Image 1 (spheres, rainbow, N blue to C red):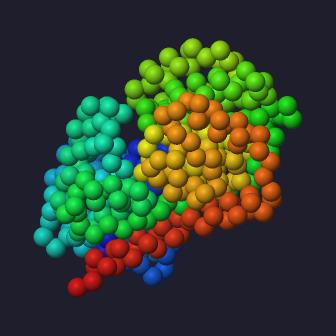
Image 2: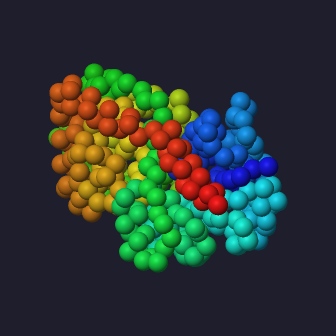
Length: 365
C-alpha cells in the first residue's frame, strides 16, 4: 500500500524538459531510505523510465492509457480514485495537472512556469487552453505547490494571490563532464545551444547574433541541439537567411552520451531564452565549466549565480556582444572552479529530499 502516488502519466517517452525532471527526481526519491512508500503512476510507454529494481517500498504501475485524449480524461476522472484505492494519502502531479478532489487525498502540483498564461503566443492554441485550465485547477485543488525557482514562485503569487503554500525545489545536475576547451579543433570555437526548438528559446535572434559575429570570427561555429517543437517557422526563416549558414549545425534530440560529447567540444553555451521556469541547460553547462551566455530576465539569471554573461534577450546586439566576450575570454582557474562548485551544488538528491519533506508535511495527521 503506497502512501504517496506520483503522477507521471503526462511525461512523454522522450525524456526532454519535464521528462528529465520526472525521471531524475523520481530516481533520486526512490533511493531515500527514510521516506513514505511511493507508487509511480505512468503509461505503458513510459513505465520503464521509472523502474528502480533495487528500491524498497516503491513500485511503478501503468495507470493510464498512452493515447493523449484518453490519458487526459483518465487523469481528470479516475486517477485520484485509483491512487486512493492503492492506499495513497497524497498525490503529486509532476506536470501541472491534478485529478478531481477525492476525500482524504491531499494534492501537490509542480508548476514549471507560467508562460501559458503570460505568453500564449509562444505555444500552440490547444496547449494554451489546456494548460491554462490545468494551472488554474491546480491552484484551486492543491494543498501545496512546487515550483523550480524563486522567479517562478514570485510570478505564481502575483497571478494567484490566494494560492496554497509554495515551495521552491530547484532542479539538479547529473554527473558532469570536463570540457576540452578550444572547440572541436584547434582552429574552431564551438558555441552550442541546447533545448527544444520553440518560440521562447529565442533562436531567430540567436541566429542573427551569430551571423553578426561570424564575419569577424571565422573560427566560430554554432551547434543547435534539440528536438523540433512547435511554431518553428521563424527559426527556419532565420536559418535560411544566414550569410554563414555553412557554419551552423542543427542536430535533433541527442542521447545523454551524445550530449556529453557535444559539451566536451564546446566552449560556450548560448541560451538567450525569453523566459524559463528554471533553465536546466544553463546549470548543466555551468557544471562542466563552460562559459555561458544567457538572459538577464526570468529564472536563468537566478540559476546562473553570477557566473554567466547576462544579455538582453530581445536585443540582437546584446546577444552578439555576449557571445564574443564569452568565446574569447580566458578566465582564471579559480573562477571556473567557483562556477562548477556553484552549479554542482544543485543536485537531484537535494531536490528529492525537499520534495519528500513536502510529502511528509502533508502526511502528518
